[in-house]
Image (cartoon, rainbow, N blue to C red):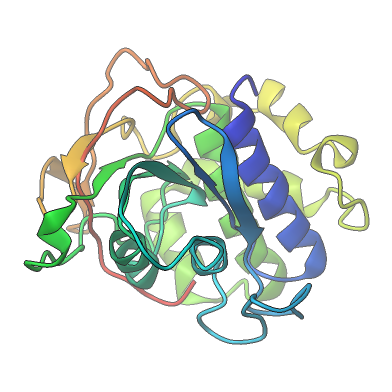
Length: 260
């Protein structure tokens, strides 16, 4: 895991997994790549202190991370990094927080909404650039953690059926995550990153050739999944590697949202 920001997102997601909530981690960086905010999902759990949402349907990692930013001003040189493709609410929140870029690691064929961002005159003042998912270990782990949560808690959930149809090769990796020791909150100590050297799903992005697509939020580009989803295409050479390069591909947003 050579990308420290991707690793930070996945560590936060693993902490969420250990806490029994949806495993998603988010980080905001400035122009220099310095982390200025970070959080994990807290839909099922308690808040660590004031200024954090917890125990409700909108307590997503992205919302709690963006809530740490100052109210005023645009941030065209800031990037929101997320371990999993954001839902419709969180893509919109990234735009409303006036960030210049959104980057996600793993695809979410169930609730991912990176291509369903609706542009308005206000949001057009600072177009949101989106890139993801990424090919390699970081993207595979971001997606597999999400699937693993449903396999552990709701194996008959609609999300599992969607993943089985769209990302069947991810199931073995997700089951290996379920078998890890969730009492160990440190992802490295628990062996999460060891899985990337053992599993074929980590050698390329779990959703076929989706990787590193580039677009401006509100534009629809690419091909479609067999079930009609817009597929993000690009980065045929895998230049984003396991986690992506902060200067690499940029694209816009969208896909049908559902509850994550």
